[in-house]
Image (cartoon, rainbow, N blue to C red; front, side, top):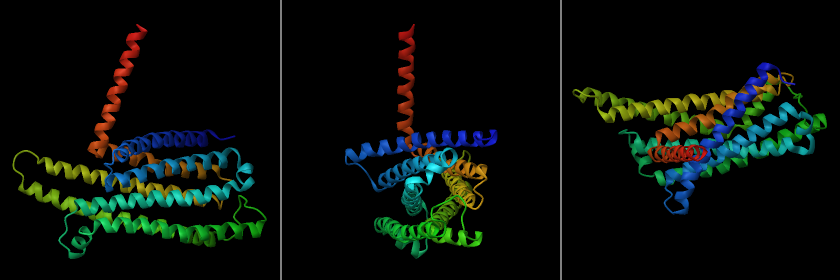
Length: 308
């Protein structure tokens, strides 16, 4: 049985996951319709890939959490742990790669730097993004064999995967860093591009403020809004990795279920939180969401009239 605090954290994680599926499902639906109409752009492709990978990732988080908390014996039976671990690697790397590619896309489209390296990259944006997709494949090829080796080594030592990791904590964390090298690469690249874009937007907004007279320039407000969106994304991105680190730490103290559930709750904030930031910050998605809400209100009014 779960304690009251564990139950609260687990309930919050479930609610976050439901919101994440709804938010990312809406994004995927909007751009999949564009794909059917053959109007899908590079931006739409990145958002669609990000949304679909996150939906699948959220389901993995939920299944993993339920099995850990309520059926730990069954979790290690029939190699379910291994299958979920491989799926987690593929989906987690995909989600982070698409998010990084989206950040680079925004950076090259919106930022304004005079450095020749930036101008060279900006002129080759259509080549850079496929290159990132290739780096995703490379990260899979590096990580999956490393994960397989880790699982097989653990089986050789214990005869089965168990809750207690039979190795020094320092060795365990070194091993986890090796498994997540691809994630660390994408995470670092994403933070760098977001930071540079924030700097560019801040410089531009400062310049517009100095030149503005009287009323606040709408362009300045748009740039301030974009900076807030980027800062929110960075905070959520960091929270995701903090939660992931907490979940990894749980394997060294498997008797502490609260540690795992709190890590799961923290990890689930990013997939749903960023999806709603994207919807509110994207004019196309925002308009589509308003149309859906309007239709729901009309449907509700129709049902009330029938009832009366």
